[in-house]
Structure formats: C-alpha cells, structure tokens
Length: 168
Image (cartoon, rainbow, N blue to C red; front, side):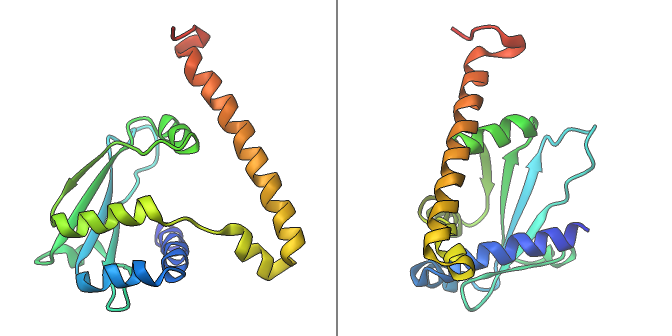
C-alpha cells in the first residue's frame, strides 16, 4: 500500500508544481537527480515509515523511484525529525516548518527550499472546476474556518504544555 500512497502524494505535488511554470523551470536543470525524504527518529511502536525516493524528471516534475536506484546517483537526502509525529502534525497545522537535516547538493536543496516557501495548493481553484466557483468559494471558506479553529485549539494545548499545566 505504501507505494500507492507515495504515488498519490507525488501526483498531488506534481499537480501543484505544474501550475507554476517557474517552479518547473527551476527543477529542470536537476533532471536525473534523486531526492530522499527520511523520517528520522520514527517511533518504533508505529509501523515503519519507508523513505520516499523521488527523481527529478526532464519536465521539472517528480517521479517515485525505488530505493534500489540510489546506488551511484546524485542524491539529496532530507531527514525530517519525526520522533513525535503528533507534535510534527500539530506544528504543521500551526504553520511551523519541521526540523530538517539536509545532505547533498546545495543547489538542489536551495530549489527544494524555494518550492516549500513559494508553492501553495490553490484548492479553491481546483474545487471550482468540480462544483463551480460559488460553491468552491463557500467550501474553501468553511475549510479555512475549520483549520483556524483547530489551529487555535492546538495552540491552546501547546501553550498549556504537558499534562495540561501552563507552560508559562
């Protein structure tokens, strides 16, 4: 099941990248290079999380690769601190970037960082193609309100600290 999930994640990533010709143009010079996302410190009580290995295509998009293709390739490794997946998810919800360690090509790492900083999924635009612009706008507004409410709740939990005590 993991390759299927990874394929869907890469399809979504490519969808977002393909809407920005500048993003594709920035990735094209790195065609043939590999990017490996590794979850460092993943809790052993959870099922193992395999690395996500992606190759940069000549079109400036990504494709899922097998770990066996790493030998002899130019690889950029990005290790995300996943020792506390719940905290990582909470931080993502609050807009925090996870702690990462990067090894490999600095130029490719810079482009990946640029992608993370500058690309956003325009879900409302995609929904408009399915349900029309008015319904998409309303659904997006509800979604933003829901995310804001959950983020406020998460911020309150984070501020209280462990066991519900005030962090102050």
